[in-house]
Length: 112
Length: 123
Image (tube, rainbow over all chains, first blue to last red):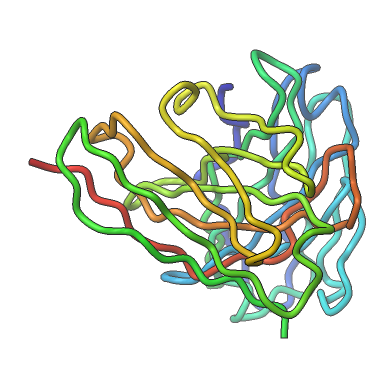
């Protein structure tokens, strides 16, 4: 179960849009629409931001959106705000090796 | 409110055992699949194990298979993780997390997380 590949860091100015990529294989991201995204502030538990590729849970800002093309999923944050500065992880169901889930390597988002 | 509270972490020697607990409240525990996810210091998230809402199916990451056992007691609204043959690389914060949807027999997202409990494996 190899981790999904994310950029180590992404930055943007307040009000700008940024996109975080999450690359896997046909056994995970490319094979299933069960990609989710989590936000984690330092010392805190992760928070679900996107589920099933592009759906937002109740209470999550519509500035967060998700998409997928082939083996790569993406999280876009529009209208970047200071409170968006955090680590972001993608996750996907995987059928490789054993049934389960795999997380991405994580991306540190910095608001300049 | 919906809440998960982990306990049982601590310092253990290599080869030792530890049992983690996760107390659930604010939702119908017996209706939801549950997971353990861990995070080594300064590292990313790693999915560890899953148990179906009724305990009938369990899945494990390759890294813990044969050493860790996930279980649940729906009468006590509690999830467990029995960890045996612990290694230094098992050192991490261990989170319990719930499936987003009730009675779900397919893949799901993790919509509620506990605050985590630290496990340190060191001599």
